[in-house]
Length: 224
Ligand code: SF4
Image 1 (cartoon, rainbow, N blue to C red):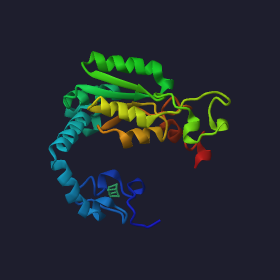
Image 2 (image 1 turned 45 degrees about the vertical axis):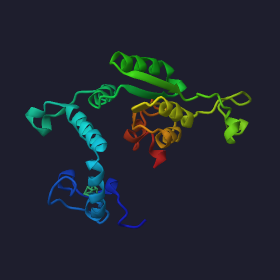
Image 3 (image 1 turned 180 degrees about the vertical axis):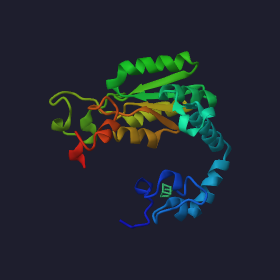
Image 4 (image 1 turned 90 degrees about the vertical axis):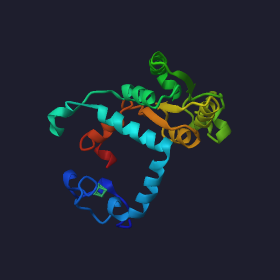
């Protein structure tokens, strides 16, 4: 590995001493804050675009509003909002009227609840399930033995069509829930409006992939 390849995950300094946190902070050789100055100008230009500026500003305001007890000082702050509330509030801040909502058929019960929450908060909702289009998996080269239900018809997840429907309906902000690894990537690739994720899919861990990370030294040590 090139040793100046950006790698914040391996940063060797205490958070409070890092260059990205402190004006005269320290930086390892692979620090993008130190090594990628030429990209700063470029990113600042992007933030000057009114739509990007507004989006970034409202996201930061939403972030700040996610904490309580700020008046008591940094060591006292505590989280006060679940993500679903943040998604709704952020979309309201951005004055979006129409939300796209793409979800996995395996989370259809949850989708019903989420759709109602969006609608009752004043949004028009366009929701599209993963199996939309009913295209057989064989169409994309999946063999019968690679399917879940071997020997039976199985519709492929169709993130490209999910995105096309949201685009056609001119959704202003898209919310993903429970899409598989890779299917979510194709929604990101094809959706025209900005996307956020309410929940990712983790079939084994109740849609909480970090459970494996939190238990990496015990039950999930074989992953290391
Ligand atoms: S930006 Fe630099 S100082 Fe900050 S975490 Fe990354 S490597 Fe460390």
